Image (cartoon, rainbow over all chains, first blue to last red; front, top):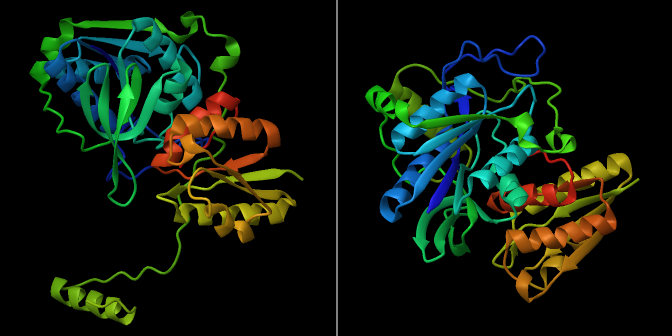
Amino acid sequence: MKIVVCVKRVPLTQEVDLALDPEKRDVRKDNLAHVINEWDNYAVEEAVRIKEKAGGEVIAVTVGREEDEEVLRRCLAMGADSAVRVDPDGLEPDAFVIARILAEVIGKVGYDLVLTGVQADDLNEGAVGILAAEYLGISRAAVVTGIEPEGEGARVRVELEGGTDEMCRIPFPALLSVQTGINEPRYVSIMGIRKAAKKELRVVNAGDLGLPEEELQARTTIEEVFFPPETGGAEILEGDPSRVAEEIIRIVREKGVNL
Amino acid sequence: MGEIFVVVEHRQDRIREIAFQMLWKGADLCEAGAHILNAVVIGGGEELPEEIRDRADRVIAVQGEDLATFDGEIYAGVLTDLLAEYRPLLTLMGHTPWGMDFAPALAVKTGLPLVTD
C-alpha cells in the first residue's frame, strides 16, 4: 500500500508572548521555535503503523521553504521512506493553492491512501485536506480517529460532536484527515534523524508543476491580524488556594449550580 | 439585494444548535442588507423544514432516500446544484465535523472562496 502523508511546519505559539509584524498581516515568527504540526504528527505515525502492519511505502510531502525540510527529516526518522518538498517558488499560497499543489504532487507520486492532519496549529483552517481530496476526485473523511485497512478500503472511525462517533467504510483511493489522539506518536531522537539523512528528499518547484496560472491564485487574502479585544466580566481570585476554592464554590452556588 | 443561504445541520432527525445560531446571524445580515434568508435542509426527517419555518424567509428542503443521513459527497452535490440555481451571495455552514467534511469540497465544485473557523 502506498500512503502519502501531508505535513506542515508551524510556529510554536503556546506560552509565548506573540507580537504582530509591522504590516499587521501575520504574527511575528522570526523569534518563535518551529515544530511539526501536532495533527500531522499523528497522521505520520498512523501512516507508518499501517505500513508496518500491511507493508508498502510512506511518502511525506510538504509545501514550504528550505527550513521546512526539518519536519520532513523528522518524518523520515519516524519511518517514512521518502519525502518531497514543494517549494512555493515565490507564490503566497492560501489553502486552495496549497491543496491544488498537493493534489498535483500526490497524483504524480501515486497513492492508495492520503493522510493529512484535521487542521494546522497556526491558521486552524481545517480545509486543506478535504480541498485536496476534491481536487484529486477521491473519497474522503474528515476528523478521523481510527483506521482499520480491510480489503480494498478501510473501516474508519469519525469523531462527531458530544462524544458520538461514526463508523464507516471507505474505498481506496481515499483521503482521511486525522484527529489528534488516534495513536501515540513515537519519540524521534536526534540520532534517528541523523540515521534517516540518507533517505531520499526531493525538491520540486510549484512553478514547474505545469498548473494553470488561475489555479495558483489565492482566493482569500489576510487584510489584518489583531489580538482579540479585551472584555470585562472576569473576576480574578487570588490568595490561599483553599480560600480561592471556597470562593469558587460560593460563586458557582450563587449562579444557581447545584453542587 | 440578494440571497443568503444557511445550511441546516441535523443529526438523527434533530436540528443542531449551530443551525439556530447561523439562522440568527443570517437574519441579522439580511436585515442589514435587505437580503432574503434561505434555510436549506438536505435530508433529515420530514418535519424538520416545519421546525424552522418561522426563522427564515424561505425554506428549501431536499429529501430523498440517499439523503436521509449525512454523506458529505452527496450533500455537496445537492448544494452545488442549489448554489447554481439561487446564486446566493453568502452561504453559512457550521465549522463542525459535518461542515469540515463538505464545505471545502463545495468550494472546489463551485469555484467559490471559503473562510473557515
